[in-house]
Image (cartoon, rainbow, N blue to C red; front, top):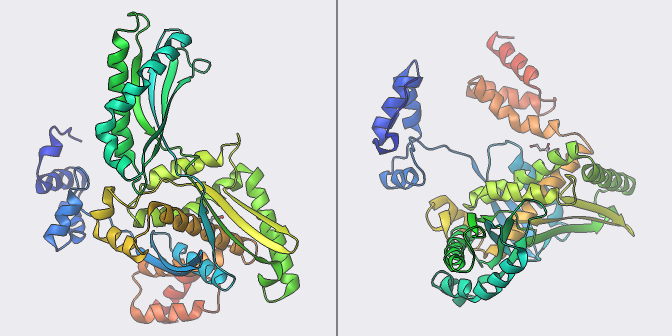
Length: 435
Ligand code: MEV
């Protein structure tokens, strides 16, 4: 393949021509596929094109809704952007199940964000500490231009401290900062603050240290690990309310708690268990225009905080009461970023009654807990495939380009039979061969 220079400067058409000419046997077919996903509304298409670099088309994800989520006595319909067929159905089932049992309770425990200026210095720690104490007011003073608006609303920098990391890495220190960013996720705010802090720090250090001791800033960046930006979501009910039959309910609760205990101590299971939680979380995070990579990275780091990767959820049965809960760090925003730009994100936030970041933290945590409840409920009873394959049936039908008549007959057949890929193929082939 040919190397290309100055690609980002080409027009959208030129980019597509270059791509389709170089990488596809049937370039007009490839072009057509890309164009089918363009939006007819030119203004909307331009908006999407400008979200990123080198955009040539749009990549759709299904945008679904899960109604009946009772959270702290308020009813929500939760928007979910996700391609996996059974996720929204599972969320809706869990919502309905808990609706009749008092719903979900959620509480924000803390909202602290973190950022660090990483630097090296051969100066001794006492001298660095003395310098840091002296320069600290100036660091705060010079970042005021950036923080003043956030401060007016009650946020800003909460703390700045020097951290000695030389036991782990020679000459390595940090200016470790914590932030309150209110309804913003705060990445741009935090990074701008840190870069200003680094600049002041470096300038002030010039006359304080000898050439050999001079601190060298390696990088200034927020941390996506926010263990002090925590939300807790919970459901509970008497064990006997879990199922109509008391013995079944007790068995269900015992197996459910056992399944969580397994995910607590067994990383192979914990990863899948937490993946199921993230099915719910990512879908809402994406629908509300938040950064799902940041949320994912943080959640998994938090799941390993005690030294081995473990379940994010907990469950117990005590004194006849079933309790299922999760504490998870979620750095979310409901202002800034895509929130006022992407029409579907705006719609998703309006659907959620224009939540504050704290409210969104609760909603997202509940979506994760609900998803895990639905998965464990299936896994410990009928198994996951029954529901999964039922939802996947449409994908298989589409794959075989089934016509309306075939669809109806296949759907009817699988109302009372177990769906499997081969069973669907057999039925379709049977219909097509006139059997
Ligand atoms: C599938 O996307 C998610 C599950 O595997 C989660 C789980 O096993 O708990 C069903």
